[in-house]
Image (cartoon, one colour):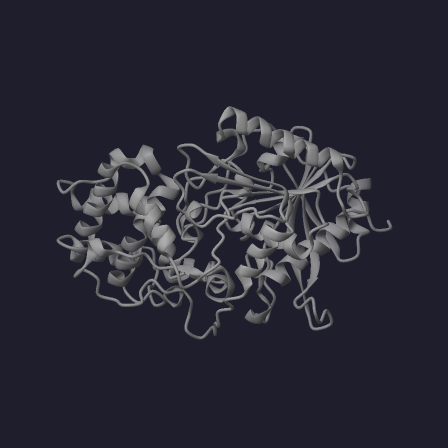
Length: 466
């Protein structure tokens, strides 16, 4: 596609495996979610049986114990992974994991948000974990956060390498957790959940992917254009168009100046994007999809009109887009996200006839706008069609959950003649932060029953020898 297929990468829209969304923090990362569960104090560093068993796994290191929800222990781990699974002797890195331990005979949920774990509360439970009262292992994606190889060979960041990370984690921890495994993730994490299943279909008994984009043709973005032309009410869509024209018309110089001054006040630079005016144009083009992902119907009445002050207009734009997230320090934290978009996952470019004559930067929506020029990228057009074919021809024990108003739903995963025990649900009046508990009562009951059935049936994969 042509602009960011997953603009949520910057927005703090990374709800982990359908967990309740956290408000965006500066830089576009989600703020640390606050668990509603009662926390228990972490025990002392004494080497107990669980820690000893974890430490006995080759390559596994126990880092520390964290406060945990009642009935759980929360342990931070590091697991040594090859940089290149095809050539494991060519260097390694430590992958960060958060373990929530309930009981070794309970199911295990493999949870990925597709990014780092810096902004995830170690006590946060994904929705399947809550439903199943299971254990949980949260995985930091390779090349994010502390799980970054040094030196950084970008060619080893691809969906197969990451899926193989997950496969090795499952194999390692099944020496302790031998009950059924369920995988889950939200947004980019939901996509990673599907990629893992494509390459290692028998690692888990079932998978729940929330808000997972399925971009199979990087050249065609018309599905999302059509979606944004129909979503919501005509009045709300007209208000969004009006505010876009205000931002790039009469208020352009003022808004770009505010962006530049805010960046300078934080000591941030704009070398990657290029300038405050380029950032303004880029984010204004992204506004409709980001608005419907995060705010939706409830936000229609808050869209500023022409009478809004400059401060009010800027504050609203910043609230929707998280403008500091496009400055150099924050873009650098998520370079791996944009690299993946530019090499395999795909990008979208919004058609914007309503802004004719107002756009100054041809190609501004291309992913290179957000990736430093010294990092080479070459797009692999066969990667996503391969995933799509697997889902439709061979995918089994899969559950896809979408929000009715989420632009990601314009390019969803679909089942096909070879899909088995595969389900797609749409939550009414919902955006990108979707959960099973937002489904209609009948769909919620069916989805929950399926999840429990998978957990009861057990994994397809035999546990390796202890």
